[in-house]
Length: 364
Image 1 (cartoon, one colour):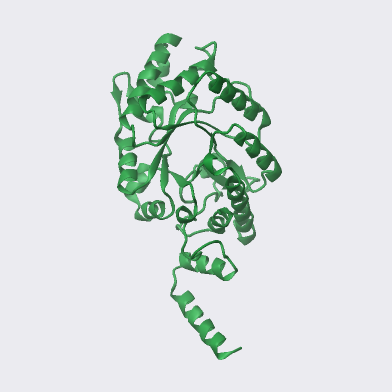
Image 2 (cartoon, rainbow, N blue to C red; image 1 turned 30 degrees about the horizontal axis):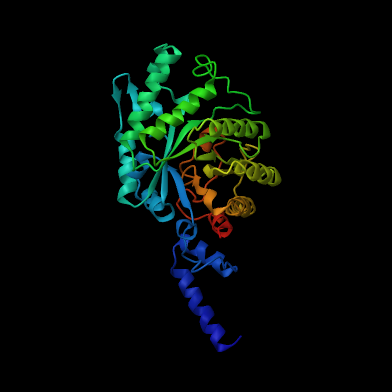
């Protein structure tokens, strides 16, 4: 060892010892040969990406936890309300809206130079109980929905840059979802959904309008049904700008299936939004599961595969990648999937996981 190497090694050790755990993780990956762009040690996702990096957030966490708020500001430049902008949250009665939480998120984004993706205007699972119980016929029902879309989109005109106008129309395999609200009222539900896009466009002509669903790239039947709907919309002049696939996938999701489906989805020519990304690791729902280094690396490789795949899109189709949450501390999957689940880029203490580096490495 030369004297120069000895001194450099000693200085590196001193620097490492003085770092926080979060910084040590980043230094570790830099030492292992990360050459992914300028200043890889400190580069964040939003700094490297040439498109928006979003996260689903909750008002209460932004208000109550400084670490949560700081993480959102550090890593992301777009937000989606996890609950706050859904119909059931806003439309409290036939004569009243509650905009408190939605207003907070929109103001938070404005104050911090972020964009807002509105989620979601029409979703079968978010019609308020009072609305469902009113037993409107199709004409009255649609008239009410039109007023709702016009009021909400109009309120945030120029401040919410994009909307999921319609969410989860199709069942697994591609049939119309067997839900009791829309299908029981309309002989042509797709026609109704198309008119919802028109109402949103009229309220804010500059907003980008999306259809959002899950399993789009891995369910060929559902994807075919979505593409058929898009073809009909385009033929009839319905103003749809983009498609969102939620990407609630896992480390064992077949990558070739994912890529083939992603290419097919992009063949629509629309903007593509990976809208609700998280990657499950406890794929067997095991009570004895341990999230060890091997599992963390598998997750990192999955994130890298997805972001690499996204970067292969034409630049004009890249809208955003949005994670469904910010930290493993607050993820819907610990209640919906299994209490031992660690699907996001930051751990429960807000440290970057290997998944963060995987995501970063996949970016151009």
